[in-house]
Length: 154
Image (tube, rainbow, N blue to C red):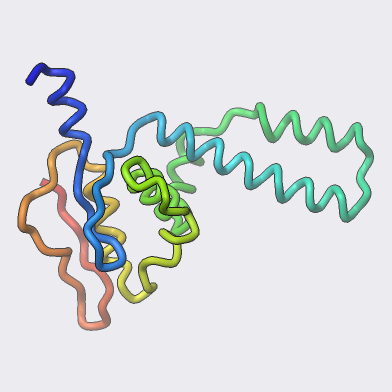
């Protein structure tokens, strides 16, 4: 196997989500760009709904849309958004969807009950890690209330 094939194969991982094992891919810089586009689309949709309800001036709408589409986002802003529940769902969906195109973002968002967030956190650690996930390792332990404990990447 050449280095390119080996590199691509190392990007394929298995994650457990919703009690099912999924074939997925590790996240890339391209995924962060897709996430930024996703966030911009949400902002534009929200703005257009408000603009329509308020019957805003078309010139103001056009200027605001231009700013929403073209204004740079800081890395800190993107990272902060990626660490929200919605951000985690988007990255898990993007990773799983690569090999399971029938799975929707909404399905991923509904897949894990809130009291089982340790499963989603473990899946995120796998798709974002720079090394292959440990084999036969269980999910991170939880405290008495079922909250995930700190995960240490090796």
